[in-house]
Structure formats: C-alpha cells, structure tokens
Image (cartoon, rainbow, N blue to C red; front, side, top):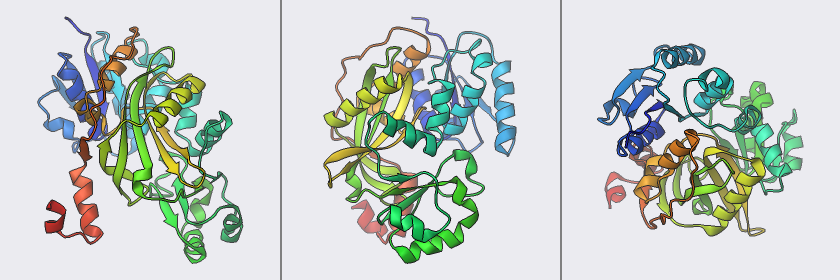
Amino acid sequence: MNLPPAVVLTHGPGGLGTVRSLARRGINVTAIAYDETDPVLWSRYPTKKVVVPGIEPEEKDAHILEILRALPDNGSALFFTSDQLVSLISKNEDELGEKFHFRLPSKEMVDALNDKVKETALIESLGFDIPKTVQKLPSEASELAKQLRFPIIFKPYLFTVKSVFNKKVETVDNMLELEQFYEDWREALPVILAQEVIPGPVNNSWVCSGTFNENSDLLDCLTRQKLRTVPPQFGISTYSISLVNEEVLTITRKMGKALGYVGHAGIEFRWDDRDERYKYIEMNPRIGGEVGFDEACGLPTVWNTYQVSLGKAASHSGSQQVEGIYFIDVDRDIPSMLRDGCSAVSYTH
C-alpha cells in the first residue's frame, strides 16, 4: 500500500514516538527537529532529518516556515508536538493547509487551550468540573487567601511568558509561603493563574491520550494513572501505569463532543475525594510526549491521527488497551528520586 508521507515537527520525546509509529507502518517520515538535542536525530526511522537553526523562538518559527515551504508538495500529513508548534501552525493554517494535511481545532479553540485563563473559563462554561480557580490574581496575598484554600498552585497562563515566570507550576502551603511568593513574583502576577490544589496522592491523577474524528467521536484512547511526577505531585508524569478508567473515558467523550474537537489531544483529570468527582486539569491539542506508550499498550493513536489528518473516515480500531504496563521517563525520574532522598541502590530495587 502506497501511503502518503508524513512530516513531524518534533520538539521533545513526543516526536520520536510519532516518527516510530508512522515509520513502522511503512510511511516515509521527514523529521524536523526543533534543536540539535532532540532524540529523533539519533533514530533510524526518519527518511530525512532537519534541524531548525536559530536560538530565539521567533527566529525558530521563521526558519520552520522556511523549511516547510521548501519541502516537496506531495500531500504529506503534518504532525506537531509542542504548544509553541501548535500555535505556529494555527497562525499559518491557511498557507500550510494548501500544502500539508493536518487537523487542528479552530484558531479560537487553539488560542483558548493555550491560555489557562480562557481554557478554564471555557471548560467550566461547558459544565465540566475544574478545581476552584482565580484567573486574575489580586494585588495582595491576603486577598487571594480569602478566595482559595491552601495548598494553592500557581501556573503561567501562556507558554510564551516563561521569560517572566519560568516555572511550570509553583505551590504554596501556608500564608507565609504565599506572602513570599507574592514578594518574589510581584512583577509576574498579571500572567499567573491560581487554583486550589486537589488533595490526595499522586495516583489520583489520570491522563488520557487519543484522537477525535471529524464527528468529534473519540477513537482509541489510552488512560494511565500517574505514580510519580516532576515536580512532585503536580508535574509531568515520570512513572505511570496503563489502566482503563471508564469514567475518565466517558468524560473525555462528552468533552470532545461539547468542544466539537477534531484531532489528537492529551487530557488530564484528577479525582477529588471531597465530592467524589473527577476535575479537569488541562488539555493539550497536540501529540503528547508519551505517545509511544499508547502504541506499546496496543492502541494506534498516532495512526488514527494520521488518518484523520488525511481526511479519511476513521473509527475505533477495536483494539483493547493492554493494562498493567508501566511507563517510566528515566531521564527525569531517576534525578527526581535522588533529589528526594532515594538512594541509587533502593531505586534499582
């Protein structure tokens, strides 16, 4: 079968998983690596590899567009693996859509999902549960303490504000820490959102990865339970297990329909023991960093995204998720455990 080629804009581990999944199905893949440290550059699977020159994001964006314009017009499916790349493709969708096949939510939805303020307002307006949120921080710590219970978690509302607030998340447990946070980050307060932390162990957090077709029907979707994260408790999953969670899948199906969502998404929820409900944490409108784990658990999520990108009628493959498989991000998990006081000997046992 002569399958259309694919171009993968790779910015981290999600690109490598995407390239592997496509190439194993006989698809010729061009990998465009955001920088020279991208793991895809050491892979045997791409038929062509390109490194994006430049240092600053704006410079990188301009070079990415130049590279894409120079590629053959051969009906390639286009994949993207970071929020920055999603934003770039969305802004240039009209031009790139004439040459490549890809599916993104509307520009308005991409903008909302990349902006924590708009995102939380949108999801809550559709009737889904979210943690109690303050989207515009008051000028004084004492005022925020009146609105949210401790612990409080802070997040930058846009990926583009890292120069102002260079943390994925920051948590405070009491009034003293909150006052110190306000003192340290006074100038960044306008670009930060605050939420109540949902109490409980890290394994109350669940992630699902899957694709929605043209009718916003959820195709194969993997659910996994977080076991360890970086930063601890509230960050990126470094250790998790493949388990089917029907309640999370039901919420995900409803959310896709409510949003009219099409394309790949990674969605996170957290179980709240206080009211026994799952609360929405975030949605990423892109290929996730652990997408290779989907394939390892028997679910062809990248293949589904490829078909949807090409405009083909796609339906659930009928594959069943293999449960009890562990995912570990060694590069992040080992240093994190050692920082937390785990010895190298006990870690390996």
